[in-house]
Image (tube, rainbow, N blue to C red; front, side, top):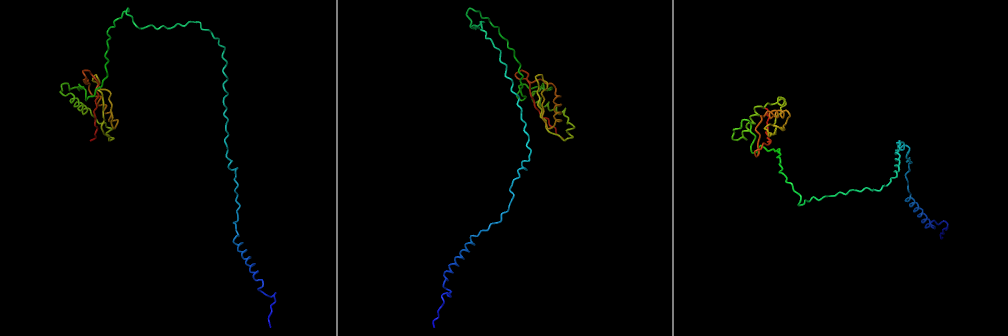
Length: 234
């Protein structure tokens, strides 16, 4: 006996259609899952600017400078009457300074020219006749005698200042003075490590005797001279 199937009971009748529908549904779900986007929850911030707090600063009042009013215009000048100049102006006549042969020429007497003494200063090392220290008048070498007498005078009058000894001050004082044209001592200048030492050097030089002035070409001249005075503690 041949078995016959009911066409309505055939399970595989529409299997292809169901496969296609299922595949489309799966593809749709996969696409939707891939395209799904999730956004973070936005927080609400207060971004408003409080303008009143910034504009709370006091603005100084500006004073309006009052400019003084302009000066009044000058008064109109009075009407000046123009007067014709009728006075004649005398012309200045320049006479010729040329002399004619007829005029007599006066003879001019000889004019005496007074010699003015120049204030010459000649250094001690190059002067022709050195100043003569008292006691060196008969010395053959007056320059050497002068220097020896100067050293003798310094040793004789030398006194070490007590205040400089207490302070332990010592050193050399350079002294420059000028033997004037009359033989006196002047224009004394000093430079040393201490004022007390300089004062002592000044006192020594002021005690120098009057000398015979130095001469250059037979005329008395000023002669500058320098000498060091050494102050040394024992």
